[in-house]
Amino acid sequence: MLLDAGSTPPSRLVPSACPWLPATRSKYGAVKVYAVGLYIDSGRAASALKPYVGVPAGKLGAPFFKALQTGKFGKTLLLQFHRSVAAETVATAMKDSLASRLGAAALDKFKAALLVALASGSVAKGATISFACKGDSLSIAAGSSSQSLRDKSLCPAFFDVYVGAKPISPAAKEGIAKGFAKLYQS
Image 1 (cartoon, helix red, strand yellow):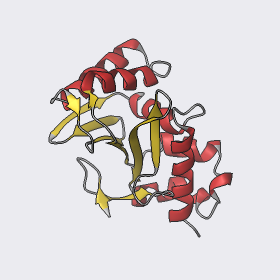
Image 2: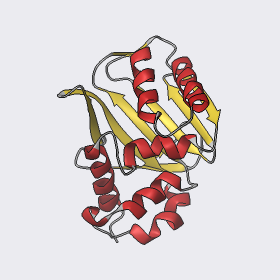
Image 3: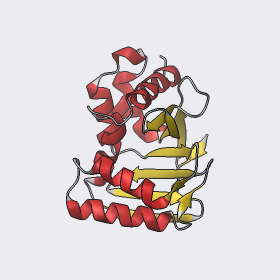
């Protein structure tokens, strides 16, 4: 069992075909930039996700992903980078992914907080960034640096990027479904 950044309840990694890196996000074609892992507070998520326990991955549709996206339980997306990337590049790409989902003020606050969390100026190969949602709070942690934002639209928008109707990586969304189905077989 692992703990979310900044919280004490136990969380479980939702696995997929890869033992601990559920999906890989590619940018610019064939370049693998980072792997995505989803952690959920399994105790608090139990009631919201109970209807989906024992459901095969291929049958976990839009209602399941909406429950993941909007559920009030703690959840964390962990990105582990396959290569070094400049902090500004990461922050701009994340902001662009959120652009159709958030207003300008929220986007600017998100990007500024992410850049503060990425204080070193780059994300090294093998480094991780976690995006933890709990209630209306989004916490961003990279190494020993972290930032928190309070905005009720941020967490649902951030998770929509990965599990919404038009995810940036369909493979990541599929990996999350496969991992959940494997972890929560009846």
